[in-house]
Length: 197
Ligand code: GRF
Image 1 (cartoon, rainbow, N blue to C red):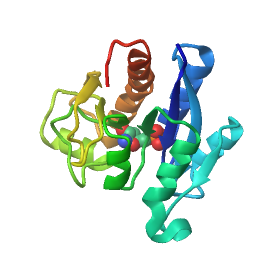
Image 2: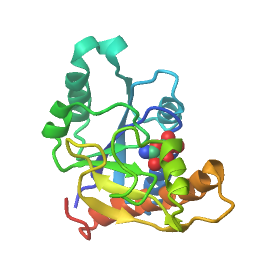
Image 3: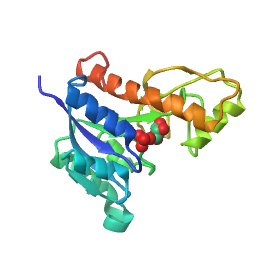
C-alpha cells in the first residue's frame, strides 16, 4: 500500500508539524510529508520545512491577493496530497479549499471539543476559558475541518488533568505535550485503516 501524502498549513511555530515529520521519519507513522504552506513568510514552520528538505510555499493575500485558495489548491494538487494537516494555521481556510479536499482536512484544537471551540477560540483564549469554567480535565482534539469553526467530526482526543494552581502557560504546555503524541497517533490510525475518513 502506498504511503499517505501529507500537506501542511501552519502559521507560526509548527511544533505539531515537526512532531508529525519526526514520527514519519522514525517509521511510527506511515506517511510522507510532501509540502508545507504558510501564510507567514517568517514562520518557524517554513524554516522547519527548509531544514527537512520538504517543498514549501509562502501563500498569503500579500503574495496572491484574492487567489489564495487557488494557490493553496494548486500546491496541494502538485504534490499529490492525500490529507491536509492544519498545524496552528491562524487563517480561516477558504470554503473552496475545504470543498476541494472535503473530509480530508484535519485540525488539532487545544481543548476537548465540542466544548471551548468556535470563532475566537484559539491559543490562550481556549485555555483561559477552560480555567474560568473550573474544568477538571482538558486536552487536545483532532477533528475534520468543515465549513464551520471547530465543528467537524471528532477523530481522537486525549485528556490531561487541570490543576487548581494552573495558569494559561502551565495548562497550554501540558496540552501541547499531548498534542505532539495525539496528532501523529491519529494520522497513523488513518494510515492503517483504524480511522476511516
Ligand atoms: C496548538 O496549540 C494547536 O492546538 C493550535 O495551534 C497551536 C499550534 O502550535 N491549533 P504549533 O505551531 O504546532 O507549535
